[in-house]
Each structure stands twice: as structure tokens, then as C-alpha cells.
Length: 194
Image 1: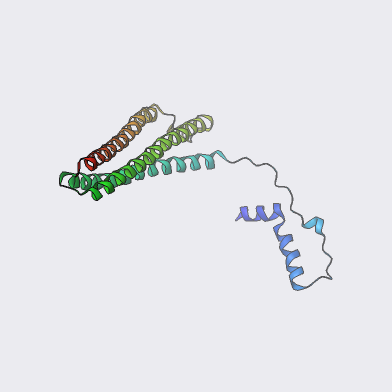
Image 2: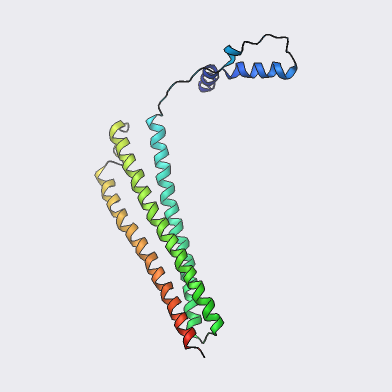
């Protein structure tokens, strides 16, 4: 509770509350010192390294979660849609169905390009958060002389993360190429349909 007392003492919030309460009650006869009711400057207080460390860890975890969720959603949507498109192309689709398939697969390619950009961006931010965590850990250390983000083991795992990122991006590029193939095949069949 000391932090509440400190906040109220430093910012004169209680004086402001008293002034506004007096005005609201209609106590205009009461003499109010407006200079004394102005908040005092809090001054510059740096953010503690523990707060920054926790915030960076949370950002890093969130970026990783979002990347995996995006990749899973992309593949969850791509596989059934690709199966349905190939099943329909294997039969004898009408010209209207082929036009629908060509437009739909072009839209799927665009959605996959967006997914590719999201995965690529997440990789950049995860690397940024990792680098900031390493710097913060090296400057301030962790109690008990423990190294987490600046350890050799974590550095080895970080280097494998780049390969994982590249594999996810390659899979999405593969989906873009596959949808592009469906688009071109559908367009080719449209002009071949009588």
C-alpha cells in the first residue's frame, strides 16, 4: 500500500479531490489556494530493468504464439481448400465453376502472401526481442549468476529458430505456388471447355 500513499503524496491528488468536492458542494465561501492544489512534478524516474525484462519476455512470447497461430491457421485453411479444388478439377467442372475456382485460387494466393508477410515480420520482431533481452541480461545480470538469454545453449537454439522461420516461409511459398498452379490450370481449362 506504500505505493498508493507515495502516489497520492507526490501528485497532490487528495488536494485536488478536496477542491473539486468543495466546489461541487457549493462551498464557494471556502478560500481555496489553487497554487497549493497544483500537482507537483514527479521528476524523471527510469523504468526498472526488471519491468523491462518482463515486458520483453511477454512481447517475445506473444510474437512466437502469434506466429504459430498464423501458420497453423494458414495450413488448416489451405489443406482442405486445396483438396476440394483438386477434387473438383479432377471431375468435369463447368465453365462457371472453373471461373469461380480461378478467382478463388487467386484470392487464396493473395491470402497466403499476406500470411508469408506476417510470418516474416514475426521473425524479425522475435529476433529484436531476443537481442534486447540478451543486452539487458548482460548489463544487469540475473540473481544467482544465471544466464538464460545470453547463454551458449540459448544462442544455439536461436540459430535453429532461423531455420524454422525459413521452413515456415518456404511452406507458405509452396502454398502460393500451388494456388497459382490451380489458377492457371483453371484458366487453361476455361479456354479448353466448349
